[in-house]
Length: 68
Image (cartoon, rainbow, N blue to C red; front, side):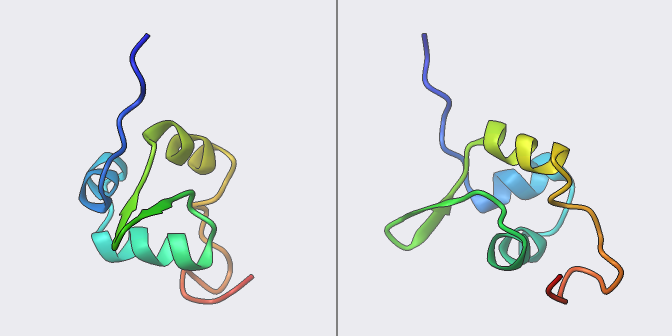
């Protein structure tokens, strides 16, 4: 069994087809699952996919920058 690799913000952005800034915004305001490793944010794509499927990336009435 191989462990799932940790990926970078750039890899998450590419996986989801969004900008890097969107990944950072979702992590800060929407609860996108991420883990701090030193100065870097690292992600497991399975956790990101689960978060998206649970509706974490859905746009609210006010958009991405407004808290719910």
